[in-house]
Image (cartoon, rainbow, N blue to C red; front, top):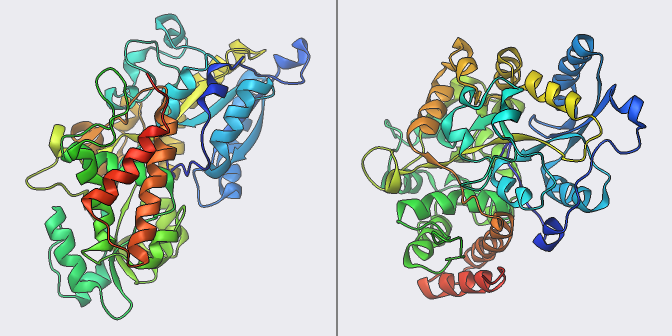
Length: 435
Protein backbone atom coordinates (compact mmCIF):
# COMPACT_ATOMS: atom_id res chain seq x y z
CA UNK A 1 0.00 0.00 0.00
CA UNK A 2 0.85 3.43 -0.22
CA UNK A 3 1.91 6.65 0.95
CA UNK A 4 0.95 6.09 -1.13
CA UNK A 5 -0.53 4.17 1.74
CA UNK A 6 -3.89 3.14 3.03
CA UNK A 7 -5.62 4.74 5.98
CA UNK A 8 -8.27 2.14 6.79
CA UNK A 9 -11.11 3.82 8.63
CA UNK A 10 -13.89 2.36 10.73
CA UNK A 11 -14.50 -1.26 11.62
CA UNK A 12 -14.32 -3.61 8.66
CA UNK A 13 -17.12 -6.13 8.58
CA UNK A 14 -15.79 -9.22 6.86
CA UNK A 15 -19.24 -10.76 6.90
CA UNK A 16 -19.99 -8.36 4.04
CA UNK A 17 -17.01 -9.67 2.16
CA UNK A 18 -17.84 -13.29 2.68
CA UNK A 19 -21.34 -12.89 1.26
CA UNK A 20 -20.22 -10.89 -1.75
CA UNK A 21 -21.60 -11.60 -5.17
CA UNK A 22 -19.08 -9.77 -7.34
CA UNK A 23 -19.86 -7.08 -9.83
CA UNK A 24 -18.59 -5.07 -12.74
CA UNK A 25 -19.58 -3.18 -15.80
CA UNK A 26 -22.59 -1.63 -14.11
CA UNK A 27 -25.10 -0.04 -16.39
CA UNK A 28 -23.61 -0.85 -19.79
CA UNK A 29 -25.49 -3.09 -22.18
CA UNK A 30 -23.54 -6.09 -23.46
CA UNK A 31 -22.56 -4.48 -26.76
CA UNK A 32 -21.41 -1.21 -25.26
CA UNK A 33 -19.65 -2.99 -22.39
CA UNK A 34 -17.15 -4.52 -24.78
CA UNK A 35 -16.09 -1.02 -25.78
CA UNK A 36 -15.74 0.37 -22.26
CA UNK A 37 -14.15 -0.42 -18.92
CA UNK A 38 -14.55 1.24 -15.55
CA UNK A 39 -11.31 1.58 -13.58
CA UNK A 40 -10.97 2.54 -9.93
CA UNK A 41 -7.46 3.85 -9.32
CA UNK A 42 -6.04 4.49 -5.87
CA UNK A 43 -4.62 7.90 -5.03
CA UNK A 44 -0.90 7.53 -5.75
CA UNK A 45 0.17 11.14 -6.33
CA UNK A 46 0.11 14.27 -4.22
CA UNK A 47 -3.66 14.61 -4.83
CA UNK A 48 -6.44 13.19 -6.97
CA UNK A 49 -5.93 15.69 -9.77
CA UNK A 50 -2.30 14.68 -10.12
CA UNK A 51 -3.36 11.08 -10.64
CA UNK A 52 -5.86 12.05 -13.30
CA UNK A 53 -3.18 13.99 -15.16
CA UNK A 54 -0.77 11.05 -14.90
CA UNK A 55 -3.21 8.30 -15.86
CA UNK A 56 -5.45 9.85 -18.50
CA UNK A 57 -2.79 10.03 -21.28
CA UNK A 58 -2.01 6.35 -20.67
CA UNK A 59 -5.69 5.40 -20.79
CA UNK A 60 -6.06 7.37 -24.00
CA UNK A 61 -3.16 5.39 -25.47
CA UNK A 62 -4.85 2.14 -24.43
CA UNK A 63 -8.05 3.26 -26.16
CA UNK A 64 -6.13 4.13 -29.31
CA UNK A 65 -4.50 0.68 -29.33
CA UNK A 66 -7.58 -1.39 -28.48
CA UNK A 67 -10.69 0.70 -29.15
CA UNK A 68 -11.70 0.25 -25.49
CA UNK A 69 -12.49 3.42 -23.57
CA UNK A 70 -11.57 3.42 -19.88
CA UNK A 71 -13.72 5.43 -17.47
CA UNK A 72 -11.38 6.52 -14.69
CA UNK A 73 -12.23 7.28 -11.08
CA UNK A 74 -9.41 8.07 -8.65
CA UNK A 75 -10.45 7.22 -5.09
CA UNK A 76 -8.74 8.52 -1.93
CA UNK A 77 -7.33 5.89 0.40
CA UNK A 78 -9.66 6.93 3.20
CA UNK A 79 -12.62 5.79 1.08
CA UNK A 80 -11.22 3.00 -1.07
CA UNK A 81 -11.71 -0.07 1.09
CA UNK A 82 -15.26 0.84 2.07
CA UNK A 83 -16.08 1.55 -1.58
CA UNK A 84 -14.78 -1.88 -2.55
CA UNK A 85 -16.73 -3.61 0.23
CA UNK A 86 -19.91 -1.86 -0.85
CA UNK A 87 -19.28 -2.84 -4.46
CA UNK A 88 -18.90 -6.50 -3.60
CA UNK A 89 -22.41 -6.57 -2.16
CA UNK A 90 -24.27 -4.03 -4.30
CA UNK A 91 -23.26 -5.22 -7.75
CA UNK A 92 -22.35 -1.64 -8.68
CA UNK A 93 -18.62 -1.59 -9.11
CA UNK A 94 -15.77 -1.28 -11.60
CA UNK A 95 -14.36 -3.79 -14.03
CA UNK A 96 -10.77 -3.28 -12.87
CA UNK A 97 -9.50 -1.72 -9.66
CA UNK A 98 -6.43 -0.99 -7.58
CA UNK A 99 -6.27 -2.54 -4.13
CA UNK A 100 -3.76 -2.13 -1.34
CA UNK A 101 -1.77 -5.36 -1.44
CA UNK A 102 -2.33 -6.01 2.27
CA UNK A 103 -6.08 -6.32 1.63
CA UNK A 104 -5.77 -8.95 -1.08
CA UNK A 105 -6.43 -12.05 0.99
CA UNK A 106 -9.42 -10.40 2.68
CA UNK A 107 -10.96 -9.45 -0.66
CA UNK A 108 -10.04 -12.84 -2.10
CA UNK A 109 -12.25 -14.46 0.53
CA UNK A 110 -15.24 -12.61 -0.90
CA UNK A 111 -15.08 -14.57 -4.14
CA UNK A 112 -15.67 -11.31 -6.02
CA UNK A 113 -12.28 -11.17 -7.77
CA UNK A 114 -11.03 -13.11 -10.78
CA UNK A 115 -8.48 -15.73 -9.65
CA UNK A 116 -5.16 -15.67 -11.49
CA UNK A 117 -4.40 -19.26 -12.41
CA UNK A 118 -1.82 -20.38 -14.96
CA UNK A 119 -4.22 -19.79 -17.83
CA UNK A 120 -5.16 -16.31 -16.68
CA UNK A 121 -1.54 -15.31 -16.08
CA UNK A 122 -0.81 -16.59 -19.58
CA UNK A 123 -3.00 -13.83 -20.99
CA UNK A 124 -0.65 -11.18 -19.58
CA UNK A 125 2.68 -12.87 -20.31
CA UNK A 126 3.01 -15.35 -17.45
CA UNK A 127 3.44 -15.36 -13.69
CA UNK A 128 7.22 -15.54 -13.87
CA UNK A 129 7.37 -11.94 -15.16
CA UNK A 130 6.71 -10.71 -11.61
CA UNK A 131 9.09 -10.28 -8.66
CA UNK A 132 8.62 -12.99 -6.03
CA UNK A 133 8.25 -10.60 -3.08
CA UNK A 134 5.42 -8.78 -4.88
CA UNK A 135 3.65 -12.04 -5.69
CA UNK A 136 3.79 -12.87 -1.99
CA UNK A 137 1.13 -10.22 -1.35
CA UNK A 138 -1.42 -11.32 -3.95
CA UNK A 139 -3.54 -13.69 -1.90
CA UNK A 140 -3.65 -16.50 0.63
CA UNK A 141 -0.96 -19.20 0.47
CA UNK A 142 -2.02 -22.29 -1.45
CA UNK A 143 -4.61 -20.43 -3.53
CA UNK A 144 -4.42 -18.84 -6.95
CA UNK A 145 -3.63 -15.11 -6.57
CA UNK A 146 -6.60 -12.74 -6.54
CA UNK A 147 -4.68 -9.87 -8.15
CA UNK A 148 -1.43 -9.03 -9.90
CA UNK A 149 1.24 -6.59 -8.66
CA UNK A 150 1.16 -3.09 -10.17
CA UNK A 151 3.40 -0.81 -8.07
CA UNK A 152 5.95 -1.96 -5.47
CA UNK A 153 7.24 -0.01 -2.49
CA UNK A 154 9.15 -0.51 0.72
CA UNK A 155 9.97 1.63 3.72
CA UNK A 156 13.32 3.35 4.18
CA UNK A 157 14.56 5.90 6.70
CA UNK A 158 14.76 9.42 5.26
CA UNK A 159 16.60 12.15 7.10
CA UNK A 160 16.66 15.92 6.83
CA UNK A 161 20.26 16.84 6.00
CA UNK A 162 20.01 20.39 7.35
CA UNK A 163 18.70 19.26 10.72
CA UNK A 164 21.35 16.54 11.00
CA UNK A 165 24.09 19.04 10.18
CA UNK A 166 22.80 21.56 12.73
CA UNK A 167 22.77 18.83 15.40
CA UNK A 168 26.31 17.73 14.53
CA UNK A 169 25.22 14.28 13.39
CA UNK A 170 27.59 13.09 10.68
CA UNK A 171 26.37 9.54 10.12
CA UNK A 172 22.74 8.51 9.48
CA UNK A 173 21.39 5.92 11.93
CA UNK A 174 21.01 2.28 10.93
CA UNK A 175 19.78 0.76 14.21
CA UNK A 176 16.96 1.70 16.55
CA UNK A 177 19.42 2.70 19.28
CA UNK A 178 21.11 5.05 16.82
CA UNK A 179 17.72 6.49 15.78
CA UNK A 180 16.93 7.20 19.42
CA UNK A 181 20.35 8.74 20.08
CA UNK A 182 20.11 10.99 17.02
CA UNK A 183 16.54 11.89 17.89
CA UNK A 184 17.48 12.98 21.41
CA UNK A 185 20.19 15.29 20.06
CA UNK A 186 17.61 16.97 17.84
CA UNK A 187 14.48 16.99 20.05
CA UNK A 188 14.56 20.45 21.60
CA UNK A 189 13.47 24.00 20.86
CA UNK A 190 10.41 22.89 18.92
CA UNK A 191 12.27 20.37 16.80
CA UNK A 192 11.78 16.61 16.96
CA UNK A 193 13.73 13.53 16.01
CA UNK A 194 11.26 11.42 14.04
CA UNK A 195 7.69 11.72 12.83
CA UNK A 196 4.83 9.24 13.14
CA UNK A 197 1.17 9.34 12.13
CA UNK A 198 -0.52 8.00 15.21
CA UNK A 199 -4.07 8.27 13.84
CA UNK A 200 -3.22 6.48 10.59
CA UNK A 201 -4.31 2.91 11.33
CA UNK A 202 -2.59 1.29 8.38
CA UNK A 203 0.65 3.15 9.05
CA UNK A 204 0.54 1.90 12.63
CA UNK A 205 0.13 -1.66 11.41
CA UNK A 206 2.97 -1.42 8.90
CA UNK A 207 5.46 -0.40 11.56
CA UNK A 208 4.37 -2.66 14.41
CA UNK A 209 4.28 -5.61 12.00
CA UNK A 210 7.94 -4.97 11.09
CA UNK A 211 8.90 -4.50 14.73
CA UNK A 212 6.98 -7.67 15.50
CA UNK A 213 9.15 -9.56 13.02
CA UNK A 214 12.22 -8.06 14.71
CA UNK A 215 10.90 -9.40 18.03
CA UNK A 216 10.05 -12.81 16.54
CA UNK A 217 6.26 -12.26 16.42
CA UNK A 218 3.82 -12.51 13.48
CA UNK A 219 0.46 -11.42 15.04
CA UNK A 220 -1.12 -14.60 13.57
CA UNK A 221 -0.35 -18.26 14.24
CA UNK A 222 0.56 -20.68 11.46
CA UNK A 223 -3.10 -21.77 11.20
CA UNK A 224 -4.32 -18.18 10.85
CA UNK A 225 -5.51 -17.45 14.39
CA UNK A 226 -5.03 -13.97 15.84
CA UNK A 227 -2.10 -13.86 18.25
CA UNK A 228 -1.86 -10.23 19.32
CA UNK A 229 -0.76 -10.68 22.95
CA UNK A 230 2.44 -12.67 22.57
CA UNK A 231 5.50 -11.21 24.27
CA UNK A 232 6.97 -10.28 20.88
CA UNK A 233 3.82 -8.52 19.68
CA UNK A 234 3.52 -6.56 22.93
CA UNK A 235 7.19 -5.59 22.79
CA UNK A 236 6.83 -4.43 19.18
CA UNK A 237 3.87 -2.15 19.90
CA UNK A 238 5.50 -0.77 23.05
CA UNK A 239 8.75 -0.04 21.19
CA UNK A 240 6.91 1.94 18.53
CA UNK A 241 4.80 3.97 20.97
CA UNK A 242 7.82 4.51 23.22
CA UNK A 243 9.38 6.70 20.54
CA UNK A 244 6.93 9.25 21.95
CA UNK A 245 6.21 7.89 25.43
CA UNK A 246 9.70 7.29 26.85
CA UNK A 247 12.34 8.31 24.29
CA UNK A 248 10.42 11.54 23.69
CA UNK A 249 11.76 11.99 20.17
CA UNK A 250 8.27 12.29 18.63
CA UNK A 251 6.13 15.42 19.06
CA UNK A 252 2.99 14.68 21.14
CA UNK A 253 0.88 16.25 18.40
CA UNK A 254 1.83 13.38 16.11
CA UNK A 255 -0.67 11.25 18.01
CA UNK A 256 -3.39 12.99 15.98
CA UNK A 257 -1.60 12.91 12.62
CA UNK A 258 -3.30 11.08 9.76
CA UNK A 259 -2.23 10.36 6.19
CA UNK A 260 0.81 12.36 5.01
CA UNK A 261 0.63 14.93 7.85
CA UNK A 262 4.16 14.16 9.04
CA UNK A 263 5.54 15.29 5.68
CA UNK A 264 5.04 18.99 6.32
CA UNK A 265 7.09 18.85 9.53
CA UNK A 266 9.88 17.00 7.73
CA UNK A 267 9.94 19.47 4.84
CA UNK A 268 9.82 22.52 7.14
CA UNK A 269 12.76 21.43 9.31
CA UNK A 270 10.62 20.54 12.33
CA UNK A 271 11.14 16.75 12.21
CA UNK A 272 14.48 15.22 11.27
CA UNK A 273 13.48 11.68 10.23
CA UNK A 274 10.55 9.81 8.71
CA UNK A 275 9.98 6.20 7.74
CA UNK A 276 8.55 6.59 4.25
CA UNK A 277 7.88 4.75 1.00
CA UNK A 278 7.91 7.10 -2.02
CA UNK A 279 9.86 10.32 -1.59
CA UNK A 280 10.17 11.44 -5.20
CA UNK A 281 6.58 12.57 -5.57
CA UNK A 282 5.55 13.27 -1.98
CA UNK A 283 8.64 15.13 -0.79
CA UNK A 284 8.71 17.25 -3.94
CA UNK A 285 5.07 18.20 -3.36
CA UNK A 286 6.20 19.67 -0.02
CA UNK A 287 8.84 21.81 -1.72
CA UNK A 288 11.86 19.63 -0.92
CA UNK A 289 14.71 19.11 -3.36
CA UNK A 290 16.47 15.74 -3.54
CA UNK A 291 19.57 17.41 -2.11
CA UNK A 292 17.60 18.27 1.06
CA UNK A 293 17.23 14.68 2.24
CA UNK A 294 19.23 11.49 2.54
CA UNK A 295 18.18 7.86 2.74
CA UNK A 296 19.32 4.65 4.43
CA UNK A 297 17.56 1.31 4.94
CA UNK A 298 14.95 1.29 7.70
CA UNK A 299 16.54 0.40 11.06
CA UNK A 300 16.95 -3.00 12.66
CA UNK A 301 17.93 -3.86 16.23
CA UNK A 302 21.54 -4.61 15.28
CA UNK A 303 23.55 -5.67 12.27
CA UNK A 304 22.25 -5.38 8.73
CA UNK A 305 18.75 -5.90 7.28
CA UNK A 306 17.79 -9.37 6.12
CA UNK A 307 15.13 -12.00 6.71
CA UNK A 308 13.44 -13.09 9.94
CA UNK A 309 14.36 -10.84 12.87
CA UNK A 310 16.32 -8.60 10.47
CA UNK A 311 13.16 -7.70 8.50
CA UNK A 312 12.97 -3.91 8.13
CA UNK A 313 9.90 -3.31 5.94
CA UNK A 314 6.59 -4.78 4.99
CA UNK A 315 6.14 -5.50 1.27
CA UNK A 316 4.26 -2.36 0.34
CA UNK A 317 2.49 -1.88 -2.93
CA UNK A 318 -0.60 -1.81 -5.08
CA UNK A 319 -2.22 -4.76 -6.80
CA UNK A 320 -4.50 -4.72 -9.82
CA UNK A 321 -7.65 -6.86 -9.65
CA UNK A 322 -10.56 -7.72 -11.95
CA UNK A 323 -14.11 -8.16 -10.68
CA UNK A 324 -15.35 -11.65 -11.51
CA UNK A 325 -18.70 -10.48 -12.91
CA UNK A 326 -17.28 -7.91 -15.29
CA UNK A 327 -19.21 -7.79 -18.56
CA UNK A 328 -15.98 -7.30 -20.44
CA UNK A 329 -13.52 -9.88 -19.14
CA UNK A 330 -11.55 -9.92 -22.37
CA UNK A 331 -11.18 -6.14 -22.28
CA UNK A 332 -10.24 -6.21 -18.60
CA UNK A 333 -7.49 -8.74 -19.33
CA UNK A 334 -6.18 -6.55 -22.13
CA UNK A 335 -6.11 -3.61 -19.75
CA UNK A 336 -4.19 -5.56 -17.09
CA UNK A 337 -1.73 -6.68 -19.75
CA UNK A 338 -1.32 -3.06 -20.84
CA UNK A 339 -0.80 -1.76 -17.28
CA UNK A 340 1.80 -4.45 -16.52
CA UNK A 341 3.66 -4.04 -19.82
CA UNK A 342 7.26 -2.90 -19.56
CA UNK A 343 6.52 0.52 -21.05
CA UNK A 344 3.66 1.30 -18.67
CA UNK A 345 5.50 -0.11 -15.68
CA UNK A 346 8.47 2.15 -16.35
CA UNK A 347 6.31 5.21 -17.07
CA UNK A 348 3.99 4.93 -14.07
CA UNK A 349 6.42 3.70 -11.44
CA UNK A 350 8.95 6.35 -12.45
CA UNK A 351 6.28 9.03 -12.07
CA UNK A 352 5.07 7.80 -8.70
CA UNK A 353 8.48 7.04 -7.19
CA UNK A 354 7.70 3.36 -6.74
CA UNK A 355 9.50 0.43 -8.38
CA UNK A 356 8.11 -2.02 -10.94
CA UNK A 357 7.11 -5.49 -9.72
CA UNK A 358 7.79 -6.67 -13.30
CA UNK A 359 11.34 -8.02 -13.49
CA UNK A 360 12.25 -6.72 -16.93
CA UNK A 361 10.96 -3.21 -16.23
CA UNK A 362 12.81 -3.15 -12.90
CA UNK A 363 16.12 -3.28 -14.76
CA UNK A 364 15.54 0.11 -16.38
CA UNK A 365 18.01 2.85 -15.41
CA UNK A 366 15.14 4.99 -14.14
CA UNK A 367 15.15 2.87 -10.97
CA UNK A 368 18.86 3.11 -10.13
CA UNK A 369 18.89 6.30 -8.00
CA UNK A 370 19.88 6.23 -4.30
CA UNK A 371 16.37 6.00 -2.85
CA UNK A 372 15.04 3.50 -5.37
CA UNK A 373 18.15 1.37 -4.99
CA UNK A 374 17.44 1.13 -1.25
CA UNK A 375 13.82 0.21 -2.00
CA UNK A 376 14.87 -2.43 -4.56
CA UNK A 377 17.35 -3.97 -2.15
CA UNK A 378 14.83 -3.96 0.68
CA UNK A 379 12.17 -5.68 -1.42
CA UNK A 380 14.70 -8.25 -2.57
CA UNK A 381 16.36 -9.01 0.76
CA UNK A 382 14.61 -7.77 3.88
CA UNK A 383 10.89 -7.08 3.34
CA UNK A 384 8.10 -9.43 4.44
CA UNK A 385 4.48 -9.62 3.35
CA UNK A 386 1.83 -8.82 5.93
CA UNK A 387 -0.24 -11.86 6.95
CA UNK A 388 -2.16 -13.12 3.94
CA UNK A 389 -5.26 -14.12 5.89
CA UNK A 390 -8.93 -13.24 5.28
CA UNK A 391 -9.03 -11.24 8.51
CA UNK A 392 -6.08 -8.98 7.59
CA UNK A 393 -8.21 -5.89 7.05
CA UNK A 394 -9.81 -6.38 10.48
CA UNK A 395 -6.32 -6.76 11.94
CA UNK A 396 -5.41 -3.36 10.47
CA UNK A 397 -8.49 -1.82 12.02
CA UNK A 398 -8.44 -3.25 15.54
CA UNK A 399 -4.69 -3.31 16.19
CA UNK A 400 -4.18 -0.03 14.34
CA UNK A 401 -6.79 1.49 16.66
CA UNK A 402 -5.09 0.03 19.72
CA UNK A 403 -1.82 1.70 18.69
CA UNK A 404 -3.68 4.96 18.02
CA UNK A 405 -5.14 4.87 21.55
CA UNK A 406 -1.72 4.17 23.05
CA UNK A 407 -0.25 7.16 21.22
CA UNK A 408 -3.08 9.25 22.66
CA UNK A 409 -2.10 8.03 26.14
CA UNK A 410 1.53 8.95 25.50
CA UNK A 411 0.60 12.39 24.19
CA UNK A 412 -1.50 13.05 27.30
CA UNK A 413 1.30 12.00 29.63
CA UNK A 414 -0.40 8.80 30.73
CA UNK A 415 2.02 5.90 31.31
CA UNK A 416 2.45 3.34 28.52
CA UNK A 417 3.48 0.09 30.20
CA UNK A 418 3.83 -3.52 29.11
CA UNK A 419 0.59 -4.20 30.98
CA UNK A 420 -1.35 -1.36 29.33
CA UNK A 421 -0.10 -2.38 25.88
CA UNK A 422 -1.08 -6.00 26.47
CA UNK A 423 -4.54 -4.91 27.66
CA UNK A 424 -5.12 -2.87 24.49
CA UNK A 425 -3.98 -5.77 22.31
CA UNK A 426 -6.13 -8.24 24.21
CA UNK A 427 -9.14 -5.99 23.63
CA UNK A 428 -8.25 -5.89 19.92
CA UNK A 429 -7.96 -9.66 19.77
CA UNK A 430 -11.40 -10.09 21.32
CA UNK A 431 -12.84 -8.18 18.35
CA UNK A 432 -11.49 -10.69 15.83
CA UNK A 433 -13.60 -13.59 14.51
CA UNK A 434 -13.34 -16.74 16.58
CA UNK A 435 -11.87 -19.78 14.83
